[in-house]
Length: 202
Length: 200
Image (cartoon, rainbow over all chains, first blue to last red; front, side, top):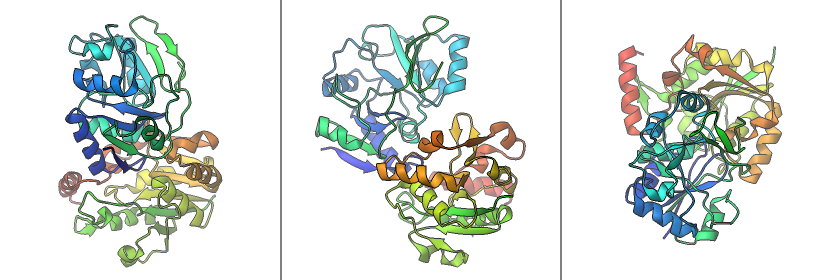
């Protein structure tokens, strides 16, 4: 059964965030709003939880997943190294829609990196996404919550329409902004290579 | 000089505290909302309160208006207050911010005439519930509310926005304290400890 809870987009009730975080902590999946679309969250440290995300999306496991964290400090625990330039980008644009791709630490599951040896990470600027990641106290996956190849959802109703009861919990904060998604910057090289020009112009 | 009305937001639900509105919790011997009112009165001539439970707040003796978009989250409350506010702009604060500061509030209100939205920006975060909204925001806000796009900052690209910088705020107050809101029993305990330390 999918639990759907309505939550304020700017000041989410912490009781609701805690309930969603508990689902992530027990290996479940939570759909939640980000700056652009609804994302599909699972415990990014757990290979089993990450495999559920791939199964729900019907996504080929050859593509790496983006991961949300609640702070630059936690981001640094997921990566092998971050250059001074990458750290400066984090400090300037986080929380916000800039995903940095960095060499993954050995502890990051292969399901997340999809064998690429890299991980895409950011601190989200949406109060619900950030509140969820903070309440869960873990890195959380955040591919868009649509079947692989489909259009990314801007409403909770689109998530249930695509996935039925396959998602355990949905945080419904109204319609998200849509648009270009987060900007993707490959910081394994310097200057960074922009893989997708999204909401933040670099 | 433009005319600014103070608007206290007391809509929304509070389940975390067992259903009691957070704003009525006492801190330093007074309800939090009364502390909020003290500060807003120092920086604006008129104050009104947005709520759908007026009985709870009648003791403040303020004019009250309903939240006309009760499913619209914080944005709906801001819209409702701004629409009802006399004058040109509304300085809008939440009812659950126990450590508001008149000097910080004044930074925002004093510049209300310079843009349609005037708000502190701390790091990448806009303090949207400690901000001035001009009447020009009503149209863009209403369009978004009708579309269900409830993030407050969503309409910022349609109006003129002025940021009060972190450095300006830090010069007169501690942002972590001034913009703190009390959402959980833990936060209330922390706020009570802070209040006791400061003897306020």
